[in-house]
Amino acid sequence: MIYTGIIEEYRVKFYTDRTTGKSPVLDYIEELNDKEKAKIAKYIEFLRINKGYLDEPHSRHIAGKIRELRVDFSKNRYRVFYFIFVKKTIILLHAFLKSTAKTPIGEIQKAQENYQEVVRNPKIYE
Image (tube, rainbow, N blue to C red; front, side, top):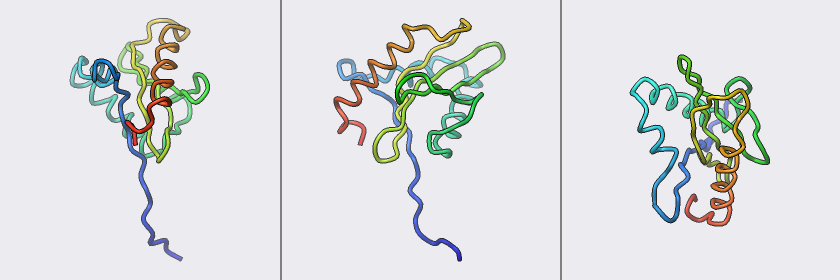
């Protein structure tokens, strides 16, 4: 039997700081060169197509519902923290260039703060 129903797709949204109105993840990506931007965009699309779940080495669990998208480009290791929100929405919380073996606590804390803000203001992301 062939399934003919509509399959809802996941969508990606960027966390937006309520006080500044800016998206730190989008601003971070915009500062990169064109090749780096393209690779990160490709991985974000891959994440969306796979409903927010990728196996290692592309993604890994960080804390609670927060995961990290792992994009390596040359010697640079870009990380984008995200989580899956209601109504099949992937929220990109925080991005940074990883330069140490272990993920810095400050980067995780920033993602957790942004996550809490999203949870407190869900209507913005619907």
